[in-house]
Amino acid sequence: MIFGSGPSFPGAPPAFVAPAVGLGGSALFLVVAYGTWRGRRPHRAPHLRLEVRPLEVHRGGRVEVDAILRTGAGVAERVDVGLVCVEVYDEWSRGSNLDSVGDPHRRFIRQDSAYAHWETIDTRAGAASLRIDVPSEAPFSYEGEALSFAWRVAARSARSERVVFEPIWVLP
Image (cartoon, rainbow, N blue to C red; front, side, top):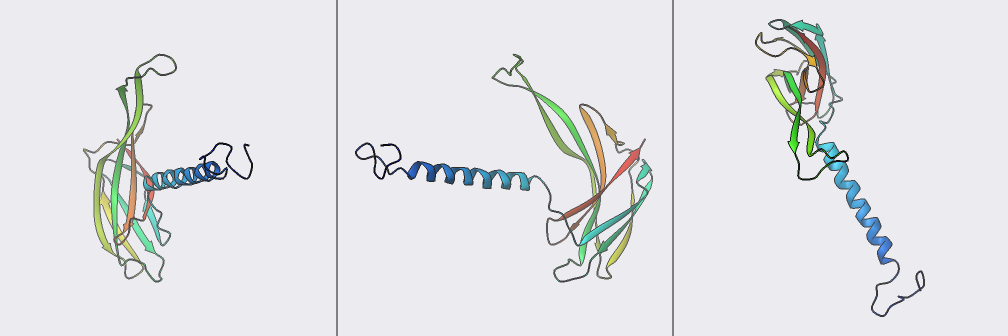
């Protein structure tokens, strides 16, 4: 008896155990997958907005940033504003298994901070302005197949991990 009221073998569990275990396992998988996905992406800061001028700047130049906060309960009075360059690059690793075409090498995309400078500003007035210098020795923006440098002006609340950013293009 497969879907009967009792077990088909003596001592076997009832028929509802297998579907319940399957549903529980699926739910656990979804919760872990969502947590992993969410942990790799910063939470957005809906109460914070950035205005950056200019959006294209040469190395050694300067960007002007206006951090604007929506007033309300729970809004941080201090905000960290920073200029950040992220390096994205390929890394090849020799694995123990062959892939579908017989190549033992695997390509991984890695990400590191190439430059980061943060300043804390007081935003009790609802807005604050800041000038940030782009270092002349820093890498310029570049989008390649195996290597990229992405610049952004970012802001995060001092009390939370919420982040907002505005991409900029740094010229040589």
